[in-house]
Length: 428
Image 1 (cartoon, helix red, strand yellow):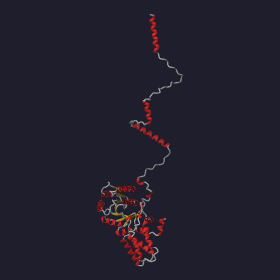
Image 2 (tube, rainbow, N blue to C red):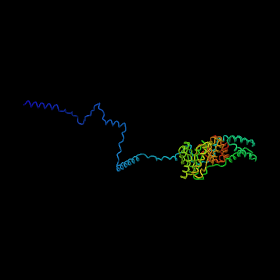
Image 3 (cartoon, helix red, strand yellow):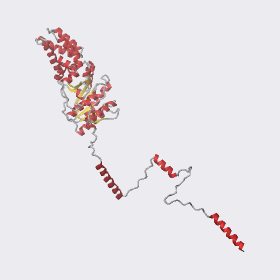
Image 4 (tube, helix red, strand yellow):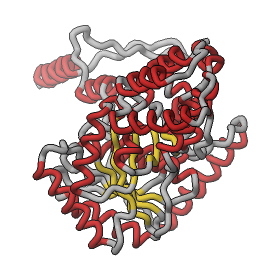
């Protein structure tokens, strides 16, 4: 019995010793154990997301809907923070609003846009330099130093006029008047011959001048062959009218040339003029009808109507021009009040033939002669004024708006027949 009890105790001791855990070693006070991780331990999913978030911005969380009171509190806090930042920041220069298109500064070449055209002899002389270097220089060479003025001299003068595109009819008329003066003993020296030439040229040119704005709106129809500068002339004319305080509407009646419409839009933006246009290939008459209607509705002063360039030999295009004019008349009784033919001075006598055929189609009220600065055939202006019996309204002697000049016969002759001093000063 005793041995049984001893055996049970021994077995109990053995089981206790096997199942008992070893005690952990104690560390000095204040020292904490360091965490040791296996070298081959892989990062957790959360760690992967943290690293990825540092490289790629995470999408912003969905906006939580605020209550009205919370929103007001947040806005008030933001205002207070903004006020503190403004107090701490240095004072900034006052910012001006961006200028409107019509208020933007204009390019240097257009610095005189908007200024009324004032006759400037030096400017006109420069514009007529080629003509003066041709016709006028040859006349000066003939007349200078002549001790005797006789019919032979007048014949030589006539030859110069004919070869300078003055035309047969006009040259003969001018020489006939000089013969009459010679018979009255009025041409007994070269100075008197020169003065007589100037006086007769001025008499032939007659009176031209700017448009007469007798109606409101005054409707101006611009016509001419391709390449004479109709659209550019309209833009320059709009600039002049705006400088005089007139309100202008531009009618883009050249519906077959997209560049013409774009060109008018540029001028309209620059000068603050309304532009009425249609789709490419639209009926030009309907576009100009709308332009006149727009001018009546807005109480504008002037409507400048562009038309497509057309060869005078194309009867169908000339008939279309007559139709356009009738349509404009339907829009406003009595319109167009002015029909201006734009002629290219470099065409010389051909310009007169063009004018005659246009006159057969539409009644013209005046001429605009462009590109006088680019030709030695400026004498054609005498033939135009004489043979067509039409006033020259404007002349073009350069690219700028100010280079479209109101025509004045006396001033033009003064610039055309400038003396040697004026010519030498230009060359300098």
